[in-house]
Image (cartoon, rainbow, N blue to C red):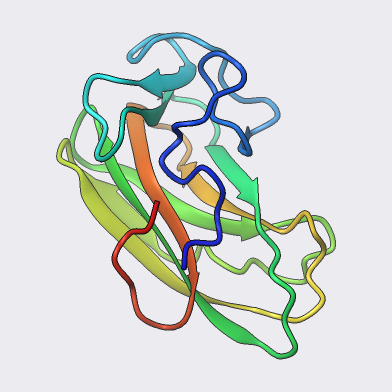
Amino acid sequence: RNLLRNPGFEEAGLPGWPDYYLFTAAGPVPGRPGSQTGYGLDTENPYEGKTSLWISVKGEGAKRFYGACSPKLKRETPFVLSAHMRADRDKVKVRFVGFGWKVPRPTFGYKEFTLTTQWQRFSEKGKLIPGLPPWHSVGVEILANQDATVFFDAIQFEKGTELAEYEP
């Protein structure tokens, strides 16, 4: 079962940004794909549903988007984080993130993924510990010093060790 809200980025109370998600504080500004830097919702080529999220970066520091997700656990528990991603060019590098203030160690982000211009599903296994603060967050980071527009859709965070079929 997918624990993330709005995993297909369909709900957007603010124009151009999906509900329940944040982005890097010094992050991009609203714009259009391929702009100097920017972010928004794309309706022309989503993986599923009506929209996907995009972020454009131009040779700057890493940029990320993330949503809070901190299930209550009695013991260390395995989880799988996955998302469908593509870029406007091949060889763009991204990684998942799992972090938060007072989170003792990253819960995801130990693997880098190389994107192409085609939608692909990527996943990473991680473990969460009991007592994570409610602001523990998961998401995706575009690695630093790249010029690219990256598209994200169908993000999923699920309990277990195996990747399950996407559940909106």
